[in-house]
Length: 82
Image 1 (cartoon, rainbow, N blue to C red):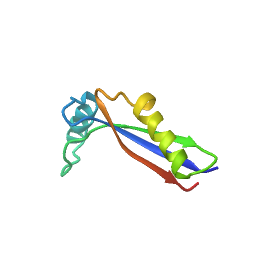
Image 2 (cartoon, rainbow, N blue to C red):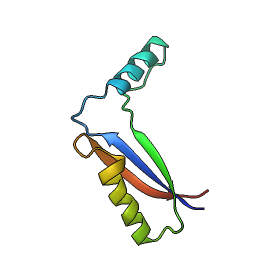
Image 3 (spheres, rainbow, N blue to C red):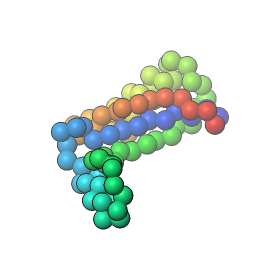
């Protein structure tokens, strides 16, 4: 069954305490050369079809239910092969 992946990230102006904690932990672990980490969410939705109408329905669900549009952006809605 095909799947559609939805990726959601905090808006750039929103503080990301989890990302900050990860960034600091990487530094304490001696992992150098990496910049700021921001943590988002990934959803995988099983679908019967991957036509434009299905993608539009998943995008609508992503913008209204899977994300909080006040503080998050839907950054990707894409089909993945199983």
